[in-house]
Amino acid sequence: MEHKRILPFLIIILFIACIIISVILASAYRRVNFISDDTIDAAVSILEKSNITIDRSMIPQRVMTGTVYEFEYDEYSSTVAPLLGGSKIKQSYIVPGNEIIVLENGSTLTFGNDFSITYKLDPEEDYFSLNYNEHIPPTEIDKLTEAEATAKEFLQNGSSGFESDSSIIIDTRVVVYRSGDIYSASCTRTIDGMTVNGNNIICIIKDGKVVEATGNWNFLTSGIPHTITLVDISGVLFKAKNDLKNARPYGNITIASIGRCYSLTIGGNGNVFLVPCWTIETNYSDIFIYSGIDGDLVAYHSSSLN
Image (tube, rainbow, N blue to C red; front, side, top):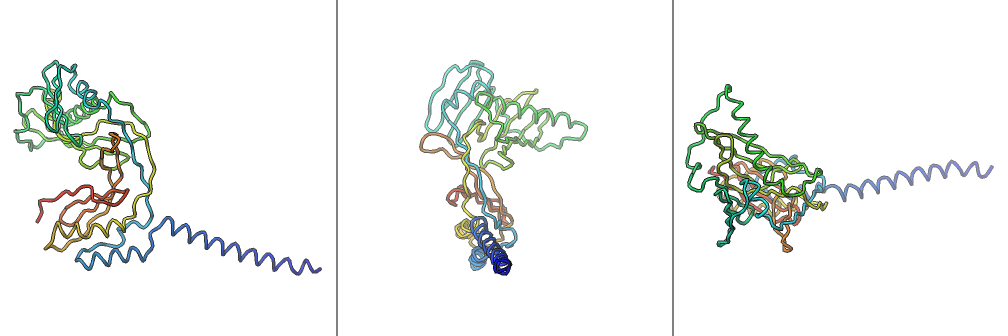
């Protein structure tokens, strides 16, 4: 009989203990996976004291993870050049900051730092001096589509000498302009749905082939993934305060959007790293890019707006 009296009390105690443990676990989960309201409020307050406005609701409260991709960089230019030019290498030489490669068919390629590249099918021609702003009527949409496909194929050829990785979602976005029968295709790359900072190139297309191209482009398509926890956005906002004010010391600044992108960097071991970053865009269309690893400023793109 005594056991029957004690059992209900034990059940109640166990039930209460489960509730307490659940609350403790939920609280611990939130501390690890979410930025506290106090931290976000502090970031908003500090920005407002510097006349920087932000809609609190646009600040991601959840702690984010991202993927750093590591690429091997060996024999990069000597692999890419013949694939783009469709011919074997005749000679190559180094000038300050660049490597110039001449192919047997006469075309030239110049590779520089930060994946800069210039390609000329005929070194004597200059198609970039043309004005590419002609409207393409709906009746000629097939020519626009053909120019887009030609640019994509050209860039894919440059990557075909490297291993590919189906786990990395790579896409190329193309915007086409025209000057007579010559087309200019502005290309940008996305990785896992995010743009790659500074990874854009313009391809000039004539008679169905790329005759000239210039920009920055990473042709590597297979990398070793490393999952990381991104530095939280509140810490980035603390750092961004001074950067935003230095860019527009006399203006009233509003943070228009917070997003994410990738940025390329070359490590001390010679390998290339694709690093996830935070992006902050202001009402002036200025864009600030911060490393997701340490929150440091990676790039600043100034708008022409005053």
